[in-house]
Image (cartoon, rainbow, N blue to C red):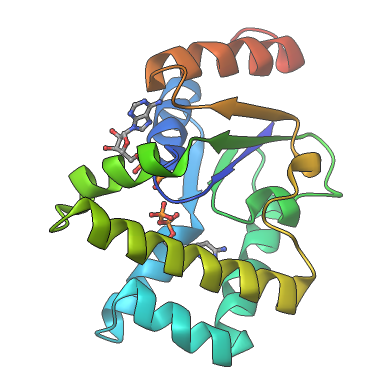
Length: 180
Ligand SMILES: Nc1ncnc2c1ncn2[C@@H]1O[C@H](COP(=O)(O)OP(=O)(O)O)[C@@H](O)[C@H]1O
Ligand SMILES: Nc1ccn([C@H]2C[C@H](O)[C@@H](COP(=O)(O)OP(=O)(O)O)O2)c(=O)n1
C-alpha cells in the first residue's frame, strides 16, 4: 500500500504523514523537505528558491521525477508533497489524500510553526508562495493544484484534529488492506 498526502501550506500534511508513517511503520518521504534542503544549501528562503524555480523548470522536474521513482520503488510508503497525488495518478494501489483547511486557519498554524513576525506578514508570504507554486505546476505539468478530482479522500483539518484525522484515515486504509 502506498499513500500520498498533499495539501497547501499549513493544512497539516506533515503532521498527518508522520502519524500515518508511525502507526503503519511505513517509510515517510517528503518532497517539501527535499525542496527546503536544496534552498538551505543555496542559502535561499523558500520564496527566493520558489522564484528561481519559476525561471528554471529543472528544479521542480528533478523533485517531481524523484517522486515518480519513489512511488514505483516503495511498497510501504507515505509520500508527502503538494503534487504527490498527481505524480501517483495512474499508479495502482495508491491511496491519494488531500488535506484542506481555510487560508486563515493555515496561516495561523504556519505563524506558530515558523515563529513569523505577524499574521499579515505570513498571510502575504503564503499567498505569494501558493501563487508561485500554482504557476509552476500549471506551466510545467498542466496541473491545476486546486483540482481535487485526483484524490480518493479530501478531509478538512479545521474540522478534526490530527489524531481524529488519523482515526478517519486508518478506517480507510484498513478497509483497503485489512487491519494489521
Ligand atoms: N488537524 C489539525 N488540527 C489542528 N492543528 C493541526 C492539525 N494538523 C496540523 N496542525 C498543526 O498545524 C501546524 C502545521 O502543520 P503541518 O503538518 O506542519 O502543515 P503542512 O505540512 O501542511 O504545512 C503544526 O503546528 C501542527 O501541529
Ligand atoms: N513537489 C514539490 C513539493 C514541495 N514544493 C515546495 C512547496 C513549498 O514551498 C516547499 C516546502 O514544501 P512543504 O510541504 O515542506 O512546506 P509547506 O507544508 O507548504 O509549508 O516545497 C515544490 O515546489 N514541489
